[in-house]
Length: 390
Image 1 (cartoon, rainbow, N blue to C red):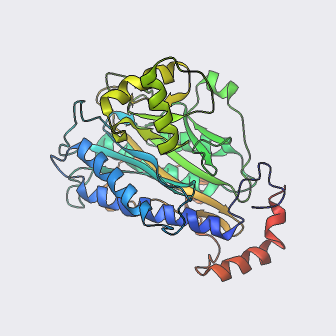
Image 2 (cartoon, rainbow, N blue to C red):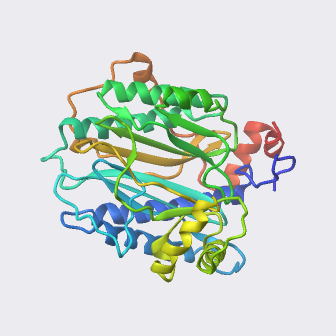
């Protein structure tokens, strides 16, 4: 614990916390890589989601085996959203599946935690794209815009900067590629056991959202999940006929009337705590589908809506987890982007953004060894924990 921290929550000023974040990050990067390789023609989206969750559970179970009290596992269930589907698609076994076709734009989104320290990631690939057969047209515009916007965001998420700098830059990059960031999507601060921390970055806010959405300043030792979603269409998310399958427990309380709902809520609390989960991972899917209804009505459980842009639009997503360390922002999740297999006619003309993207995103001489890292923290800040009080 760091002395004087507002909620007495452990932060990355503590070396062990950094280690736990990095362990969770290694796991999501490993599983994401496996899924990218499995994203082939005729693959089943449902099978890929099930595989992702199975692998996240297997890999997290290997960490801190001796410490029986320490919680670990899936922090965000695997979702695979294709083409104009924006987010949170992970169908139940009783729902229709999606089979991948050549040229499909596939977004993979997932998270894991070790002791409540969460690492999330999202990545986009196009089925069948290669250097010889590159992605082109609106698809390439959305993909490149999302990649460059996430690279720009990484360089802007640092202590002293404001969240709206990220918002404006992401919008400008979207415009340069004739694309739109998906309206109102939020990137959240991550805290122990909390995937939706207090500080948020909004992208492409409507006038109403801009009025009610607060500005925040990034501070040292904070952690963020930076999520960029760019569409070749209107950038407007709407619900269609896909059933919601991903939910999470809220802080609210209510006396549930139905026995099925009470049983469901009790299982969720025990099994997942405050982490998002998929109804598919409950023992009895049918009972879970019944039990969740009353819980959602009374706001004990909140849904993650499956959103779609208009038919024919392509939505690309990149999400990474970043630790705001004394020696600079440290990106711990994400896979390399294959620029060679993506050919867009458009590019960024804005000189300031070009300059920003040319700057290095690597933390200054990030030391691999723990002791060296500790020493660097002390040298750069005088006394690391004291800074957290600011």
